[in-house]
Image 1 (cartoon, rainbow, N blue to C red):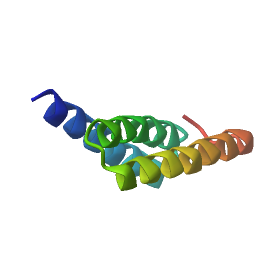
Image 2: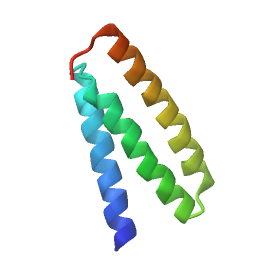
Image 3: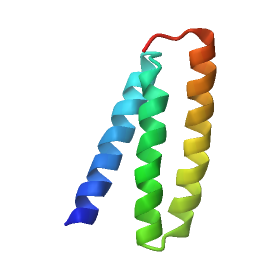
Image 4: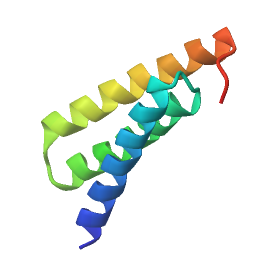
Length: 76
């Protein structure tokens, strides 16, 4: 049951972050990077290494987006 809750929260956070990114808000990349941390944890606990790789890569991409958008002065 805990796995389901964590997976659900990660998905909800990811989709919410992507929606907010569509509005060009700085909170979007921050939320999606945080969601990918949950996704990576789920991948590790289930030994799904492809999910771990994707989670790590997307966390890096979203962190990069966050830093670039912050530098550009994008609003929260």
